[in-house]
Length: 368
Image: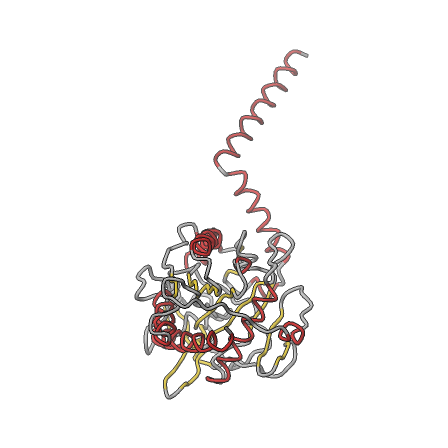
C-alpha cells in the first residue's frame, strides 16, 4: 500500500514538474499548435493539400501548412493566394512540373474577372467576397468617403509599412526559376520597401512635399508567424505619434504559384510600359479578431480601385475581402496592397507603386 502511495506521489510530482517545464520552455504551446495545425490540415480539401504552399489563416495569430513537408516550404516563404482558384482568367496550357523537378516556369498574364459570377459588382469594380459578411455595397458606397488632409509636411496623412518587408521579385527577363531560390531579400533597394518608396515619392511629388508619407521600413519578420503582431505595434505607434494620419497602407508583394510549380506574374501595359497588377485586400475581421472599421476600409478600397481603374484599366485584380483583419482595424481607410507577385520584376512593381502614389494624391484632393 505504501509503495502504491509513493508511486502515486512521485508520478504526480513528475507530472507537475513536467507541466511547469513544458509551460516555461514553450513546448506545451508548440505541441498544442502542432496538434491544431494537423487537425486543420486533415480538414482541408484534398485539392488544397497538394498545393505545396502556405495559407495565412487569420495572420494575426496563426500560419498553417497545407502540405506535410512543412519546414521545406516554410523556408521557401511562398504563400498561396486564397482566391487563386476563384473566378479569374488564367491560361489553361500550364507547363507541368514533375515532383522531382526543382525548377518552375514563370507565366506573365493579365488577371481579370471572366464574368459576374461569384463577384459583387459595383460600377467597374469586381469584389471577391470570401468573408462571412453580407455586403450591401451600394449602401456602403452611398456614404461619402471622407479623407482628412493636413496642410503641412510635418503633419502626415498617410502611414505606409510592410508586414513582410523582405518580399522580393524575379529578375528582369527571367522566364523560369529554381524552386530553392526564395524571392526574399533584406536589401530594401531590392524588395517591397523599394516599391513603397516609389509610391511615397510619387504621392509627395504631387503635393511638392506637403502631406508627407510616414514610410516605415522596419523588419517585422524576426519571428515570421508573429509578423502581423509586430507590424500592428508599428502601426499603433505611428498613429499615436501622428494623430493626423488618416490612411494606412500595408504594402506587400503577392505570391501566386500553382500546384505544378508555375509562378504567375500579373501584368498590364500602361502607356507602353509593363506594370504589375495590384490587388487591394480588406480584412473584415471575425469574432476573435474584430474590425469595427471594415465598412469604412471597404469604402476607401473601392474608391481607390475605381480611381485606378478609371485611369489605368486592368491595373487592378478583383478586390478581395475576407474574415482576417490584416491589422486594418487600427483606422478608417486602412487596407492591404498586394503589388505584383513573385513572378513580377522589381521594375514592374515600382512602376505600379508610382502610379498608385500619383492616383492616391489626386484622390485625396478629390475627397478631402
